[in-house]
Image 1 (tube, rainbow, N blue to C red):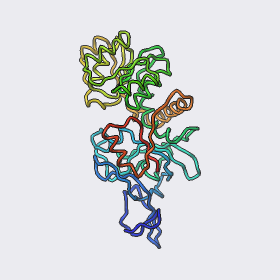
Image 2 (image 1 turned 180 degrees about the vertical axis):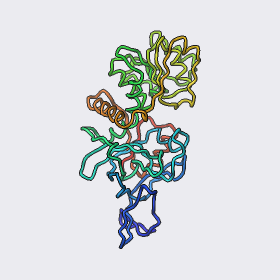
Image 3 (image 1 turned 180 degrees about the horizontal axis):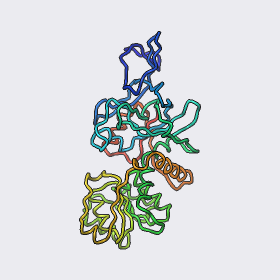
Image 4 (image 1 turned 90 degrees about the vertical axis):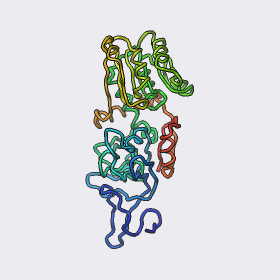
Length: 349
């Protein structure tokens, strides 16, 4: 197969998936192609290659992608170890992205890439999107919108699930990550006293600059030390814990909950298990709540995104972003996998 000048290729070898049906000229047998980051088998990093352009997909609109972030959940879905099961390969990852419609409207869109056979994602030059799962963008940078698309509904939704009341004390675990950072800022903006738990001196300082009243470095300390530090920082107990990590930090934070307190778990980046002593939960009347943005559906997620966009515009929400060319998707993915990235990586086609 020999590529032609940018955008088409002769021959019939390039097929993609049924979802990515190519537009064929029956006389020339020309196939429309695009650049896309493609995962060929579960657990592998995506490689940016020429791939069938998603044109003429029934019930979808082909948008030109402007930005696609790489949140940690993308790596989990690609691994095949989540409750979504093994992803149907090959597929283009990207649960969210920003793009421009044929009539020039900037939108944010959601996909189910990696969850259902034939569903393609945002890490490409084009994406066939379900217009029922889109959001017209207000006056906000599309790169910022793409970076917020996954973590903002998670953080804001967890605070709502935890029934946050102004004046309460909130412990935010995982404040090194973007979900935790957004939760810190949103809880602060809502009038809560915020105690952040982050790993490393840099992440601890960042939490303080973004609204935490106190911040604890969780590196190289055990559960007893962390629980004692949280009890001191919360003046004897918090009313709410936002927990995107599970494991040891969640146990320590639960020990620092006041009677009647609530813990909202929305992730397991520290450990797969959320293990809490029954006597502790019962004696203090603690509510242990689970949360996933999937439960909100698109209407709930888009409402929280609008809230996040408002916060970004008025300066109460800030995040660190690094733009990466689409052709460098594999190296960016590997950096995320290594856990050495302190910013949100956003692919730019």
